[in-house]
Amino acid sequence: MANIQLRNVRKAFGAVEVIKGIDLDIRSGEFMVFVGPSGCGKSTLLRLVAGLEDITSGELAFDGKVVNGLAPSKRGIAMVFQSYALYPHMTVFDNMAFGLTLEKSGKEEIRKRVENAADLLQITPYLERLPKQLSGGQRQRVAIGRAIVRDPKVFLFDEPLSNLDAALRVATRIEIAKLHENMHNVTMIYVTHDQVEAMTLADRICVLRDGLVEQVGTPMELYEKPDSLFVAGFIGSPKMNFIAGAKAEPFKAHTVGIRGEHLLITPGEGVWNGTVIHTENLGADSYVYLEMGTEEPVVVRLDGINSCKSGDIVHISPMDDKIHRFDKAGKPIR
Image (cartoon, rainbow, N blue to C red; front, side):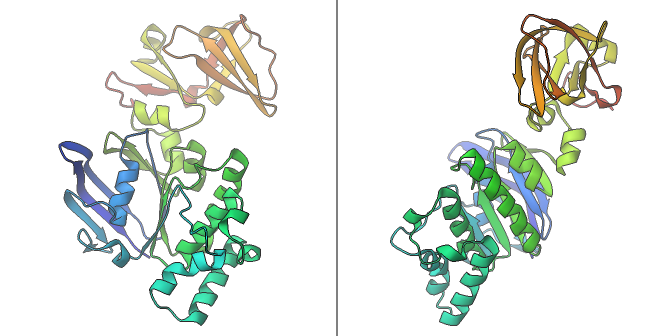
């Protein structure tokens, strides 16, 4: 296992500073997910941990030992990329064994490690196949297996599911969650832009914004107690509704935040009124989009199928204990 410490870590490409002074502790055996908008620095930060990019200033330590100048091969890490990066002319077995072969491990040791990893990932029947004979999800599991056989202290995932279709993303996400349960002694860092991946996989999430840490916490801590308007709007799907101006003044806030599932459509009078501009019935639940003079439509999430139609005027009220209040600077009022 490995504790990872980042102390005032910065990375500049020429005159452009991408990582602007990050302090972060990643606990041994933890599944940490980096999320944030495009260009926030999450993949760059992962590459700094891997040693694929040089740190401009600051310190990166594994178990208290500074590793800034240590080669990637000496850090005890294994990385799974967005692209599978498999050798097309090699079988699945040989792809998974390749790193161990370069390290001149014994044949029996290689066979044992590859078979154990294949069994863990349920790809044993494919060991003699070529990558072109596999589905995208199977190829990604081979790429993960290639990392597992190296017995790393730290697993790094850089948007590994983004090339898969929706059904395969769900299946492979479950495989990665099971992998974490079975390899609880390995520290895992995972980069994604996908809300569901972050919320379902992470022990803790690190939200990045413009090269800085905005907030670190468990998925539910970020969901229920965001430290800023930015985090409140970034975590959760659909995103939190924000209501500002005169409609927020009765709550003694510059901006009121309320999630769609915490809004109720009330017969008669409500706290706010809105005009239905669109509805989405998904079966188990439905979304009603309201025009209320806010910057973006307000989304109400309801159980089951709703009967609202475009043009209807509806009254809505927030659940009192689910209201988030923010000041002019976007900080929570608690």
